[in-house]
Amino acid sequence: MRKDPANDRSLSAILVVGVHLALGWWLLTQAPPEPRRAAETALRIHWIVPPPAPAPEPEPPPTPADTARIAPPSRTMTVVEPPPAQRPDADDAAMPSAHALLEQGRRWAGSQAGDHDFRRDPLRPAAPQARAPERFRMTPPPSPAQVLESIGQMVNGPGYEADPCPRVRRNLAGLAPGGDSELLQEEIRRLRRLCQ
Image: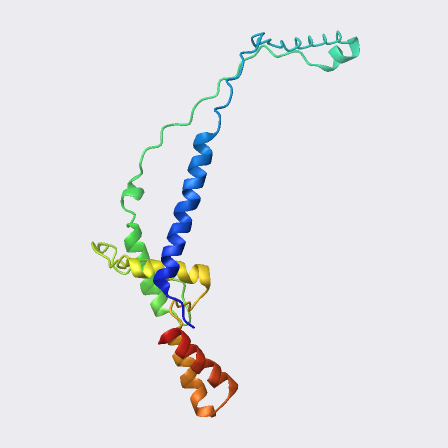
């Protein structure tokens, strides 16, 4: 026996409206709460003053043995002359640039036998002058159907389908080659009851 879904929906709608009306009536008929009486004595703020910090204890006077150990400061002053200003030498101006030194090192390493340490850095970009791409491909926004499907999978598990008919038909297709069985009969009953 199959129930009429329209009848079920109308019964559910009537039940929801009835519950909402009952809750609304209950909230509207309640007596308003009594206003709170003002406190007889107003609140007062009392500041708690922290105790004063204790005075530091005076240092004991130095003993004669302590004063004998300390040497009196010397009255002679020494003048420290600053170093003469650094001026560029003619040799510094004739030094080759860093790029020229690297190229010279690469040529020298190429003439040597075995591995050398002047390999190209694999993490350095191939063309430093090249600009980054101005455009990149974004994924399209999800459709409302995809959003609802993902929420359904999150709530009901992966592979959830609201309509049982496709699942029943898949089960029938899998059970048909096995011949007559109780599972096959049960799936046929489900197909007749739910999908026709």
